Length: 369
Image 1 (cartoon, rainbow, N blue to C red):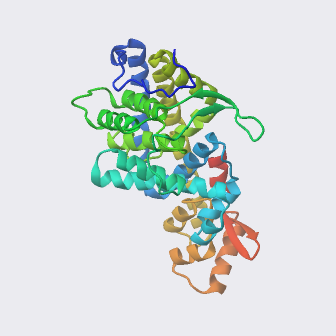
Image 2 (cartoon, rainbow, N blue to C red):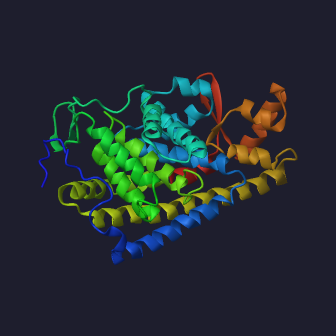
Image 3 (tube, one colour):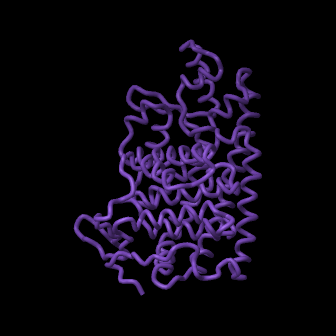
């Protein structure tokens, strides 16, 4: 048993001593999780433009991931902020945290496209984007502890003290990134590696803050690196927030008694269930897109596939954005077109001070279900 108030400097290097890759219970769960994840990749190919819808799904992942850290924003604030750059700058701090998570995910994704490896530099880059900081690995003297029930009036019980000391975090991070990148030296199934690496990253706790969100981005980037996921859209955070107590209990059990089997089964179940949820989300969005396109084209001569895809790319859209798509700049003409869309209930007008937004209620319904 580890003393929770002392730095966990004896955190074992990877791979785990336990022969988890040969465990029949884990192997059985690995099969179903792998199949579920493969089905998401197939479903992504059905999208007319994967990036168009992935931004929407990635936004839900970003919002839920920040909620795990008790950072809350309303759907309304979030959707309004992404409608244009001006509103993004005006957004409240919680909304900006969510948007930074999404941007960190994409920044990591594009870096992987050129570098094809996950190293400490890439992880630091993701962290810095999430936290909007120039900070890096926490220094050896930082007295970082993780507490339960911490609030303004209660200090909370220390449940874990991550490693600290000269060169200790750097050594652990070097081991972690080697484990993720060297498949010859560590020939473990990638899904099991992801589960193990997620625990190890959270146990190292390399940054002052933002480790949870950085770790969840790292999960998606690793699946992308191993070509198990073509785009970073797996909605893992929803499963974690629903099973938050189990998540933290099982992480603690690995620290205290090396209970790897229970942890890996939990994470594989998260992948399997999340894959099903992601597929459902994609299916519902695509079905609604088809229905809206048929309806719009039957009522409006100028309604087309490009416009339909645009109004399903994000829940809020502005008139000028639609004008660019349909090639109309006249304010009078655009106002007429927007009135026609709202009359048909394809979009709903919403005023916020002097600004006017148009909401896709069907997309919002799907995302919030």
